[in-house]
Image 1: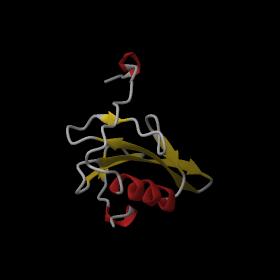
Image 2: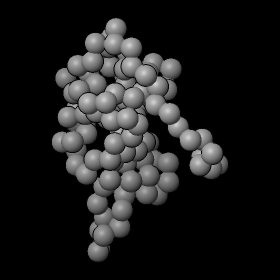
Image 3: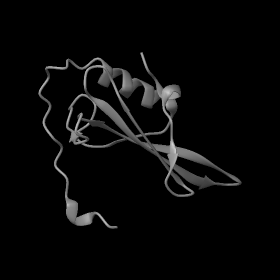
Length: 104
């Protein structure tokens, strides 16, 4: 089973990295890792969502309605395991997004 250590991140900004991974069941995980300054260092905040094969955010109630915030790699790995255990025939609804808040 794939976990956090299997993800490859791409730097988007100095503080933000992204990763997307698809699983054998057709679902995937989309992850944003934010570096948040703290004292002389920083800590990570992770934003995780379930995505379909056509990269639409899915609503999966036991995991999340949209995007879930995690504070450690183990939480991300747990969500990844839940996604990998989804049945490929499950018909998950798409999450509803307010696109009016998206900025370029």
